[in-house]
Image (cartoon, rainbow, N blue to C red; front, side, top):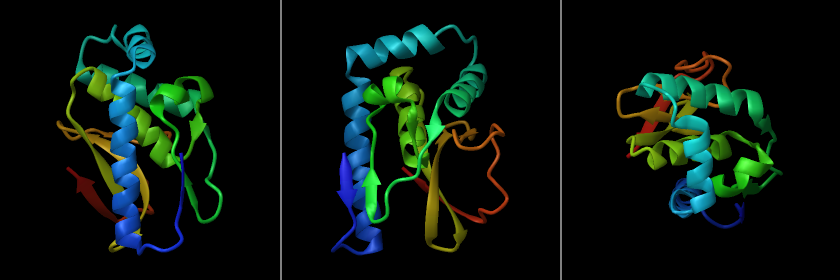
Length: 153
C-alpha cells in the first residue's frame, strides 16, 4: 500500500497512516497463514518477556531496513512481510504489533521524535512497558537521539 503525502497536513497525514496501519494489522491477524506463521515461530516461549525478546531479535536479524521513497509512505502488510522481510520502522512496528495481537497481548504504537511534536520514528510498547523496536539492536531501549515520545492508544 502506497500513501502519497501531497495535500493533507502533517497531523492529518499521521492519523491517516496510523488508520491504514490498523487496517493492515486487523487484516493480518485474521489471516490464517499469518496466524500459522506466528504460532510456528513464537508460541514456544514460556513468558511474555521471552516472547518480546525473541520477536525483537527475529525482526532485527531477519528483516532488511529499506527507506520509503520521498513523499511516499509504503506500508507492508504483516501477512506479506512474513515473505518479504523488509521495510522501514512502521513496517517493523506493524509486524511486531500484529504478532502480539495474535497472542492476545495488548500493545500500542509509540512515536519517537528528536524534537517536540516532530515524530520521525515508530516502535511498539507493550502493556507491561517493554519497548520493541525492530530497527534498534538493543531490546527495550529508546535510541539516545529520541527525546520525545507519544503513545498511540
